[in-house]
Every structure is written in structure tokens, then in C-alpha cells.
Image (cartoon, rainbow over all chains, first blue to last red; front, side, top):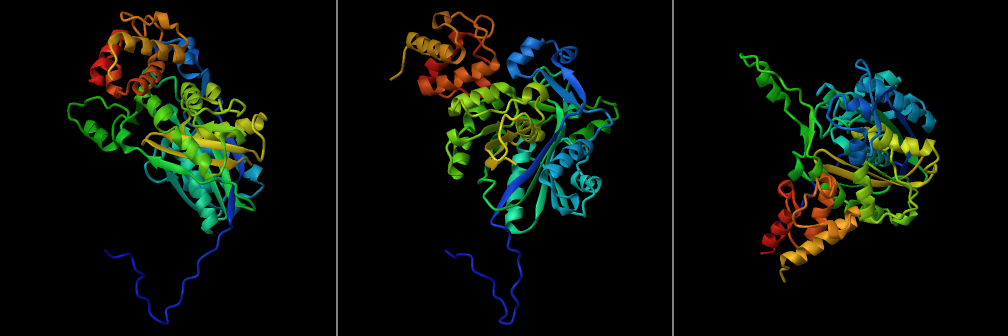
Length: 351
Length: 82
């Protein structure tokens, strides 16, 4: 057995200079953007055979927002980011990294983040996208925290944004009423106190097919070149709702306790629980299963915003702060989970 | 110690009552979970997971759609207990 050893260096070889980051990081500001157009359950029922009562009972969703046809994920991200930057009290040129969590930016390449950097008037920050679906924002907060503390960045802009209406089959009774569009953003930067607890994260690739795009891009190419001119099916997202429900409520529920324990807290000390807004039924069953104390406010933004994937946690956070449901400076446990399947949870101090 | 069908039915009725508030007496062999008891697909999952714990069996996701009536669930659990 050998252990990893240091490579040999010349006796006169200089030692690299590396940055020393600040001891702590925190979220300095959050922002959210919901597109103007409200899509009611009544409207959804013009696409699927359903009713307001049926949809409400199965999801807790009363309405969601859809972006305009010409409104892009960049447009939505910009609006949310400007609010987060304003709340943080910094200027865009102080941002050294932009992380965009999205699965609906319609270009596989280039990433959306460099374009957002230009829109915001930043100074050429590092900019890239993260593909972690509904866990994307919490993945981004974890990365941003590490970047700041390691000295790789001073301020990191994390954006979760989705235009799910572009990838939703309006005639699929299992998903048509679930998804919505929107953006949420956070600015992470140096702090005098611990502002982002340890992230408990992971993946469960055995369930890779539980939420997925119906066809791969290369699979589509086959259809498009079919001399018979076979119809191309748009790669909307499909979801095995029942399986996802079981996974979210029972399989990954222990992650909540682990994130609390890692931060040295108990559930009763929380000022807010902000799970990904997947489905109100998942939220309800989850808090029952983990035994969340009744006095802890729970994010329920899904009722009016639908499931906006990567955008849901920051949108819900901004709403809870704006409506006084959660206090500035309070402790919030945020928990993202979704396609992959992947998950990430961490306790944060609210800005 | 494997339970008999009546014991499983009683246990299942208890779970249904805890998870959905439906009277345990209403949970009879010939009832349909969805049509008669108004248990939707997500509530059904809560019943299934609790049944797994209670009876020490594994009910895979793919199997759940076959359990349309209470009798189907009782039979599946009986066989799964071995």
C-alpha cells in the first residue's frame, strides 16, 4: 500500500502565492422576479381535462406565472439579480463570479451566465451555468460559499432561473399544472460571522429517469433527418410524480436533520424552512415526516408561483422576507431536490 | 411472524385512517382506494410507505399502480411476507 506523496520539487523552486479568503461568508442580498402573466388553474383546464379543485388538492397550486414568448431566462435573471445586488448594497463591478442554475436556457452552449454578466454591467467576471435542476440554487450557494471563503471570489452572484413553460407538455396531465416561470438571485460575499452552514448534498443516479427531458438532443436529430418526415416530439420534461413524491418525502428527508446537525442547530431554532417548491403535498408530507415544530414558518410560495425549479427557493425566500414571514438575520434551512436525482440542504442566515 | 389477511386489513385500515382521516371501518377488501376511498396517487404513496414499515415488506414503485383495491394490497403484503 502506498500513500499519496508530494511530487519532488527543486531545492530552489519558489513557493506559489495563494489567496487567503475571509473566515466566513454570508448571503448579502436576495431578489426575485415573477413574469407578469398569471396563468390560473382555470386556464390550465383549457389544456387538460381537470378542475381547479383537482389541481389544488393534488398540488396546492392556485396559479403560476408564464413569461412572454420573447422574454428569456436572461431577462428574468437580470431583474432578480438587480434586486439582490441592490439589497446587498454593492455595485455590479464588485461581482467576481456569476453562477446561473438553470435547465431551461435554450442553448446548451454557450452558457447563459456570460450574457447576464454583460447585461448587469459587471467587469468580466467568471461566469458559468450549473445543471442541477431544482437543487441548482442550493448547489450554487454551496459553491459560492466555498469560493468566497477560499479567496477565489469576493462577491458571487447566484441565480436560479427557469422558463419551464418552454419545456412543459400542456397536455400532460401529470405536469401541465405544476410548472411555472421565474427567477431568484442571491449575492454571497465575505462575512464577520458564519452565514452559510455546511451543505449536505448528494445524488441518487438510480433514479436518473424519474424527472427528465423526454428525448436527448441527439435523439431528436434522428427524427429531423428521417426521410419519411416523422413528427419531431419536443423534449418536454416528464416526471414520475408518485416516485418523486416517495423519494422526496421519505428517502431524502434525513438530509434535513443532517443539515441541522452539521450547523449545530435544532429544528426549533429555525426562523424559516424553505424547501424547493415542488408540490404543496410534498412540503406537507415532508414537514409531517420530519416532525418540524409547528412554530417554524414554512415557505408556501408554490400556491401563487407554481414549481419554478431552480428559482423556487430564492423566490420563496424573497417573498418571506418581503412579507415579514421570516426575519432579516434569521436562520433558514433551505433544501433543494430534483432531477438527477440530486439534492442539497444548508442553513443560512437570511440577509 | 407473518400476519393473516384480517390482521393485515386491520393494520392497513389503521394506516389509511392516520394518513387520510378516513374511518378505518370504511377500509374493506372490495373497496377501490381511488374510487371508493378517495385516496389519490400521492396519498397512496404515504399509505404504501407506512405499510412497508408496519408489515416489514418492500412495495416497489412499479407495483403500486397494480394495487387498485384494498384486496390487492392485502394480497400483495401477505405474499411479500412469505
